[in-house]
Image (cartoon, rainbow, N blue to C red; front, side):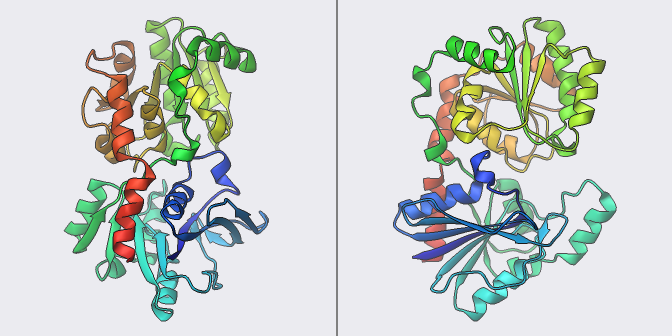
Length: 370
């Protein structure tokens, strides 16, 4: 079957190189079971149009376009001739109606893939405006919709969408180091410590996420300051970039943590396993986390995740053997300092291995496309 996987939200150029991209992971899994797949991303103007052959009947396309916030505004037809099915990461994207109309006109089965229904804009006024401009719910009520989490599934049903199927976001198995257990953690700590000019031989806290408001990176510095008071050897590595970098650095200085916090703008996917491997704990403070790819990655590598309660973490972490959920940021430092005896590294790994690899969701999607 010829399938197009489309992400309508604006992305950064070649984001799959540094990020476990959901659309590429899904595309790879669909191609692995015999489909011919094109994955489409929209990127800011000036980025350059590009097509990359990822092999095994899988191609990745990035298309520069104008945008309104995170909403891509590409107006030309781009879906390849002969396409029989479209999986569209649509959420509340304003351009979804155009994709849907094209599919109807050309006899293409279109399935929206939804992780959030309303705007997640930090500016409440802008968020309300975006919600008014984007009314995808009227279309969702007439279709079969894939929901990324049980909470989104319930919310859609409550709003009158009758045909909703749970299809969780997953990890791309080809990007994971399946042989991670054979690595020497202390040797990795030494290697990465030399790379960053730090002594990482002791306790390591890992934060992975964009340095912007919803990820709470400034607050993460405050949480780490509390951890440092209790675990004196602790070092924190923060992987991510964003407009709050200056604020994060200022807070690091204010807390006197320059020698204890390492900022890393980005790490190639092929190297990320090393950072997870050396971490004693991975922390997520996003209290509106839709899913949490870094949570999945950390758990795959058997790491203790401490996360503030949110739809994504609440779904992924089912019990204390798999990780720790906190009601608020104030509880995080204590959870890191005194991890529960129930945590089981193998249980965390198996939760991901058995439920959150793309081959599982790909089969669910094919049942709807065929």
